[in-house]
Image (cartoon, rainbow, N blue to C red):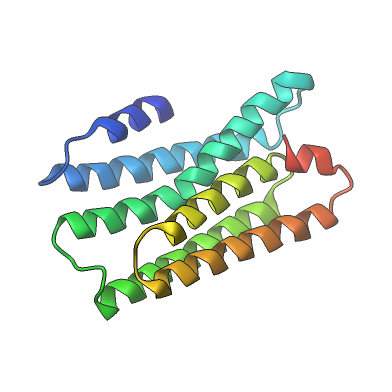
Length: 168
């Protein structure tokens, strides 16, 4: 489900009704990745059998935590909404605050693979900040990345088994 949905999302045509189909796909893929990540939190395993699936699921879910926001923004622009309007910027900032909150909650509830999840979220947020968008959106994205980093550090300080938490 996750890989088929990802493939469909990656190759969907631009414009028209396909923009809306892409939104449905990305949210469906995110839900499936979240289920996989949660299930892998308690699966006993050792060595690479432990690390690879958990770290991969963490990276994927981390990226998919940010991707819907980026995808909705690009869809809005493709549909003719100017990113320079105050309303568009307010919605973008609100979406980034939501991403930071969701990511922090996931990190604070994680037992394993929080590091790969956080790295992917921070990478996505910094990518949004680096895009040539409004300054308010860039500042909100950097602040959201900082919240995620602080949540990861806070969770790591409360865990005895930091390697499992940070790697998988």
